[in-house]
Image (cartoon, rainbow, N blue to C red; front, side):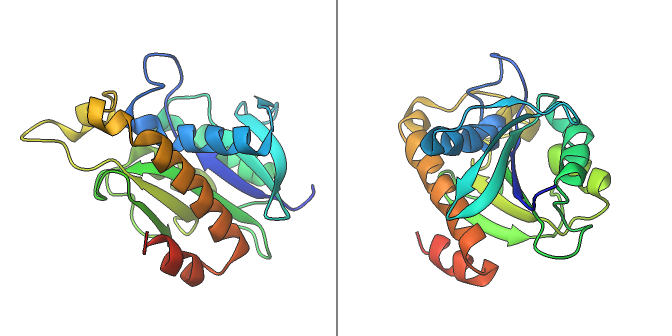
Length: 196
């Protein structure tokens, strides 16, 4: 298979979840596909929705799993294997996962490689499926829940009224961060993105 960078946006399927904080990763990848003028179709080997295009001159596969977040690895594993993307392969193959992050202020974007999953079941599922935690991550800040609200409930709620006005900027920044990540070293991309 042609070498491609696989960029996965995490979320939950269905209209009930599409505007929730937990879906911001999927929203970001869908936004990027729209910017590139690419349409999604079902990838038969994995069941995920994919759009194939070029970003910064590099072949990319934009993917949104159609299963629930905590089962993301069930589709990301076969997808990464099909495109030889991810830390279990050698060479230029890359897996990038775009996801919501409670430990980052709302609206901020952070880049990293590897590390723990911080209670994020989507990341845990992917780590198990690809046999490594050492993939690239685009972390989109959704902030901590107010008061004593359960974080699991918080991420499944829609953005607040004030946050909704900022979501388009977050998605645009996420797209720019993804492009910087695949066209620069991780350190260079981090230096630029983390200064925003």
